[in-house]
Length: 424
Image (cartoon, rainbow, N blue to C red):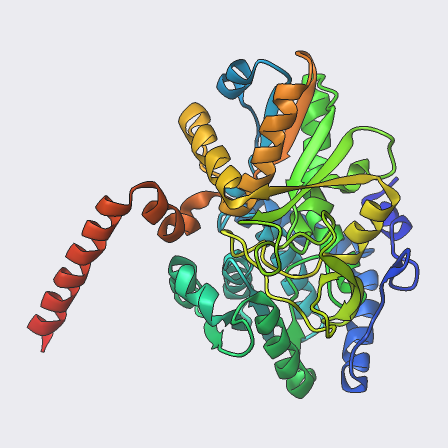
């Protein structure tokens, strides 16, 4: 079946995945979203669009990304074989570039001259900024002020690509607030602006679009496993909003096997504001936020609750509607990993395989290591390393080597002050 036909076959039911999804937006944005929906399903069936997208994937993103057999880790674990989909080796360091390039190319074909985006960990912002630079489109990225502080390397990279980064100081100053500001911008500028949403959520057709552009991860993984004669027992991915997970799982969703495991942020505890687990535990309920219906962490008044995660990309209070539906049906199993467990998995795989997971992906790695230990030799566990850990240096270094990191920053600050004083 041609790719475009498969995509159409998996299309949501009028924007819904079971009870979740939909399009809950102000009237002013309805025509803009309908325009995107019509253009997307037209372009995705156009051979010229797909040919250009494939060329960019090969030349710019560097696809396909490798599938690594983690031989050292597998031997130490003593159970199933562990494989790592090295999505962090894609250009800009994470899976986010797959969707950013796809939507940016769509925006260009629609004649939009400006793209806005939201970002949490910064990887979607970096990917969008890079895609806009490549395609010659103005780029504005909204980012919670707290995330700006803890992801300064990504902020610097976005600005290097020519994007304008707008810190958001309202609310909890994190991803949900960045999304709110992006929607406000779009409502005032939709005639020439395309809102490039980074995760598999938001009003329809965004969950469909993001799944389609991210499904390249799963299609490559399936082919790479087949080439090696490996039948996977379990596939594991971290879940914030859900873009890497739904893309990784997509080619396997209609099959009975393998098991599909999504891993949420367990944070520092199970109390309110201590985690970002929507599908595990009892802290979440069904609600409508950011234009779609899904499972959200809400307070007693129905307002979005505070969340916590060591990883900026997993502290979003909601989950994509398709993943929520698949969790409800049981096709996807959900687990949680704590901040500590994620950091332990990150250091283990760094020391055994020479691979540094992003903190988001390290949550998935934690569950994958546990699963591999529990399964019999000869089985295979595949984890999606959705991003690499370069961006997390300012989070991990103070935790892993606090004194040395503090001394380094103090020396750098003195050197910077001396340099600036000399220029004056």
